[in-house]
Length: 299
Image (cartoon, rainbow, N blue to C red; front, side, top):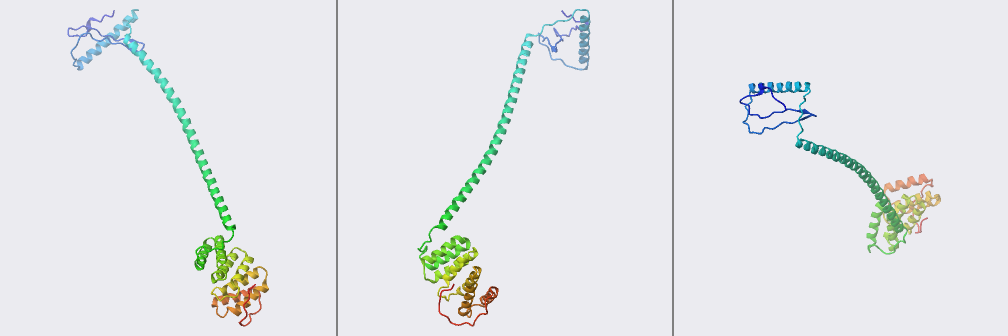
């Protein structure tokens, strides 16, 4: 049993036991068994406490050197607490390892989700592209069927003038459908001024499409009987150009001669200038003087 030096005894000491033991990093403090008044720590008391601690250290050193080590049994509560702490540490390590595995799984799942999202985006783009192509093909097939269907012989509006106006507007935005609309006017209203004008405009569409032979047929139909409509003079010049484009120079020159005889006098200066230029370009002989002539189909 550890005995303290007499210098540590004091009549004012109320402490029944004080032990400081260092064994395997564990310090056990023997609690007091009797209540004690609060100590008023000042410089003197602190110095005294320091001296007492030093004396205890020297006494412990002397006993250890004399072969009488101080042995204090560890506190069972401390041992039990240390065991619980070790158990908590192991559980914390297990939880940390589990969290790391979960984080790894989450990272892999996140990567897989990102890959799936990119694949879905690419697949969606391909599906939309396929749908767009399919719609285009369906529209093209429907348009092809419409353009190849027989020309209607009934009026869409019930009025020749309204039919012609609608056909001209359609031809300005959709030449292929406008071509059919003009042919519908011709079929629905034969032998009318509207049908003749529709034929003239149909010839213009054929020229724009590079179909000069088709243009010759349309212009010839429009000018049958040599009408006196305002468009007739310009259409005659277009007929001459179309005939020349199909290697029918003689007939082209004949059309220009008819222009001089039938329309030159009433034509505007601009149209007469065009006729002169056309005659020169084609290489037709000089125009004869204007004279009346019997009506006949051109071309």
